[in-house]
Length: 73
Image (cartoon, rainbow, N blue to C red; front, side, top):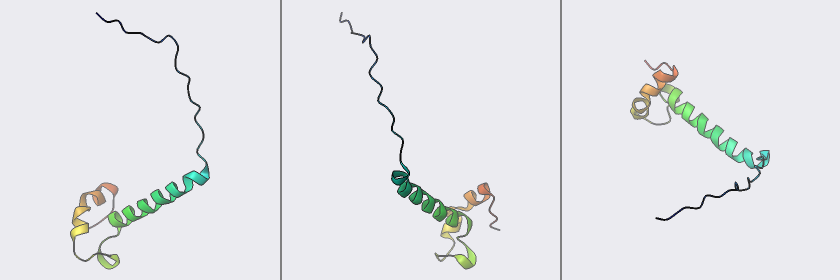
């Protein structure tokens, strides 16, 4: 039967360096633009402000509109 060795010392913890705003800014901008695009498609992609013709986008996002409280009928 083989025996396993159990280490008696814990590995050294690596320090966590804070993320600078300069590194975070592009990601925050990307996420902000993505959220605005999603908000547009869920909340306003129908009627006079429609970018795409037809009812496809409206029907795909229909339940999400009701879940978020956007009126659509």
